[in-house]
Length: 174
Length: 236
Ligand SMILES: Nc1ncnc2c1ncn2[C@@H]1O[C@H](COP(=O)(O)OP(=O)(O)OP(=O)(O)O)[C@@H](O)[C@H]1O
Ligand SMILES: [Mg+2]
Image: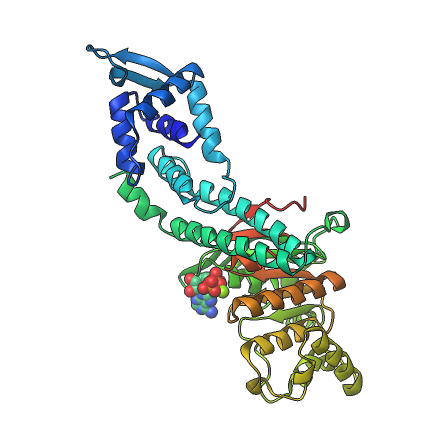
């Protein structure tokens, strides 16, 4: 799930409190949709239960936002796997992909690899649709073409982002 | 296109290793590898200026790399003489570029017949075969026209017919649909890949368009003169 992985990724640079996690998330990824506190706590509770984070300290005064969370080795592996696996190509994917790219830059991973892996996945699906289109009737052709044009638009975004990684890295790590 | 995994021969028909090429101080290739098998279509993708065309030119023996090896059916291109290499280009390779590059003084039919004529075929035979290819590319009616009198899309179909008429083992296509709208680009790719599949030609397809690359069996990405192969295709 994206929010969980994103919060995990934000913990890679060091332990954070619940409120600090929310702030960091909203600042980087929450432009259109800031997190509710409730989302943060339910997500952190799930991560805790799955052993992906541990409580690293509690500030006096209680309340879940005062818990300090640290990522575990299992959590690290989980982020690693999430970043390395391509997303299912579909419209409006850019949110998740953008998040992955920014997290990779923040954690000193190869953002290029993420984009390359995604391109390969997109092309794989585009080949399949092209084949279906060539074998199908006229209705199939139109439907496949619609999907193909959307996937192509994603790929253009991928290429453009790939070409601007240096700029994005400079902004993200400033 | 795909589905030919079982028929891929173990030896690539064309391969390149560690290609280096600079134009003066400008590096164009910096350790590019490539291989393609008979019947396979490989898309070469990557940003503008990354070295795609230079790679294609090295593979086709048009440009000599500064370092690295290109092998065609086991034979090193650099070990061949100029005459041998141009004979190879004429007889075993076919070319399609972004702008047809047809000979303006010849009719479309004569353009398509040209590779056969250069290989020594008699005029009548050459033009008969050329006419059949024009028909396959759905432009039979253009035979008597000159390239200046046909549209870009039509000219590109004539160019594809010319590239395939001598049934080359390798077709080099550099942005073959780059000057066409989606509908025409699509049709040219369908016709090109159907013809290549039938003649078991290998196709090196340089393109920056994903929908065009989707006609390939797999893609190779060139970035800063280096290649990177994605094994995303289900070919192997
Ligand atoms: N004949 C030439 N003389 C000098 N420099 C060249 C020549 N051909 C290519 N270059 C340079 O080599 C590099 C690679 O060029 P190449 O044409 O192979 O790129 P490309 O990937 O095909 O780009 P595009 O997508 O724009 O066609 C570029 O920096 C280009 O300026
Ligand atoms: Mg080029």
